[in-house]
Length: 304
Image (cartoon, rainbow, N blue to C red; front, side):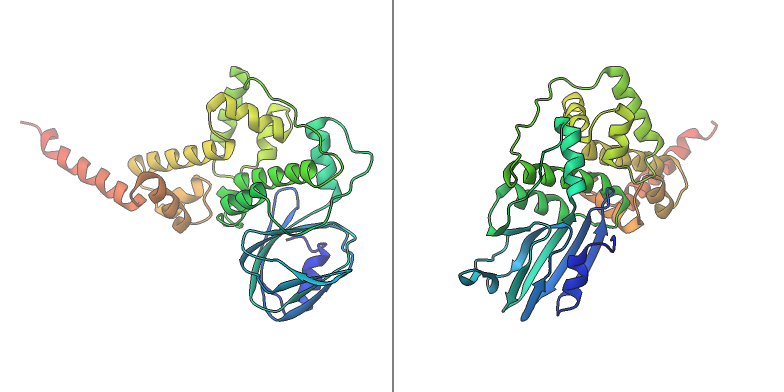
């Protein structure tokens, strides 16, 4: 994860235990933390932080002008804008995940989607708040996916974009209506995108890469692609990875590790888990079944 996120540096000066980190394609940062019985002072970072409580947190207190206030619980979030000085008294166990991003991330996204930039940009602080969209995006993507897994990068970048769009619309002065996207990609353009995906299935495809092929913003590309095929880009790419793996299992002597690499998975174990979830069997079982079927055909192929 990029080292310029000061909240990480400041947290590590206390008792906080950094359990996992990740970097998204646009240099946004992810960090999973555990802490207990700690007093943390965060001193005016130059970036924004969106935090979701994953477990515990009932005894986490935020210092306010009216004294210490609590209200943490799993599924609740805190939005800490840049330049905010804050103090937290963690009086019990707490597990949480941070997403770090900058004004530039927000401005770039606003320009892509609305083709304009806000005259000023100020996120509104939130603490111990509830928001169904934020919780759902964290749980479905940021909490459930391996941040280091190459095949997850497309889904992670899509989720982070959706989170920032939601923050702009719900917790800033912008609150612009999202542009309506009607119609899908032109057939020739869709074919080009599909060919690009097939060519680079062994790579960690990113939403930015696909959108650039279509000369569209990530927001517009994602919605037009979904209208064309009925599924999101990250779902389609995973389908194609698994389909190629199925073909290689049945028609090549490659090892599971080699097949995982050719299909864009970082490890054979992750590939096996994904394949089992989708096909109801581990890849080794499909290969064994294919070999058994081939063996049964041998007597019929012998000359009379």
